Amino acid sequence: NAGVTQTPKFRVLKTGQSMTLLCAQDMNHEYMYWYRQDPGMGLRLIHYSVGEGTTAKGEVPDGYNVSRLKKQNFLLGLESAAPSQTSVYFCASSYGGRSSQETQYFGPGTRLLVL
Amino acid sequence: AQTVTQSQPEMSVQEAETVTLSCTYDTSESNYYLFWYKQPPSRQMILVIRQEAYKQQNATENRFSVNFQKAAKSFSLKISDSQLGDTAMYFCAFMGNNAGNMLTFGGGTRLMVKP
Image (cartoon, rainbow over all chains, first blue to last red; front, side):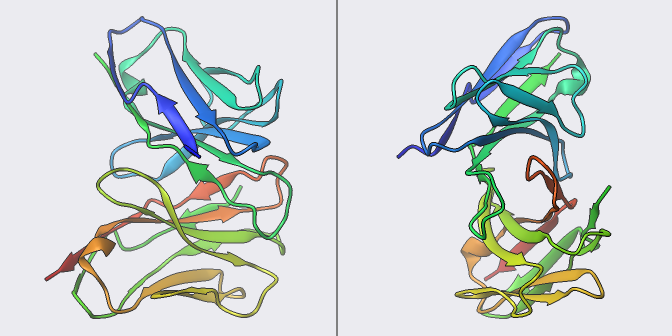
């Protein structure tokens, strides 16, 4: 199993450009998440999904959109990139529910630089 | 909203010695989960240990153990017999009783293990 994978690993954008980050998981997880990590800080939740076709806002959703058309994929879109969106983006997934084994598994991250 | 505080931005320890990382949190909930994640220079987020609030017994995973003080809302991580590979950022995270099992992260502690 590959676990959680993210594409691309690194990207440079100009202000105003758009792009889509792809997250894929092969663990049949119901829940998926997008976080951003800024220098010297912990992760902050952007958007999340509790199942195919559903999405919800997290702590810092402005400037981002997401889609979960397939259970294994969770896409993060930036319609008009801004320098404030320069960050490292992490995707995560989990089984969902409130079992004692509920744990989020993270992808390797995507480093995004907006000039 | 829950908050997670890690009051030690940086720490260092000699190889083979023991170090304790601090974490406090604020919540009005009684049923929740707490986690410690490790982020080495590779940026990959790796689960170290988890604790369920309704369990009084402190969780342990090999050289890693926690001191969970529910009344004080404290959740410290003890690393015994520190190894060079333990050098990383460590993040404390809280999962409350929310619909998406969302995690709230602390700001992190950078741990350096010295030879």
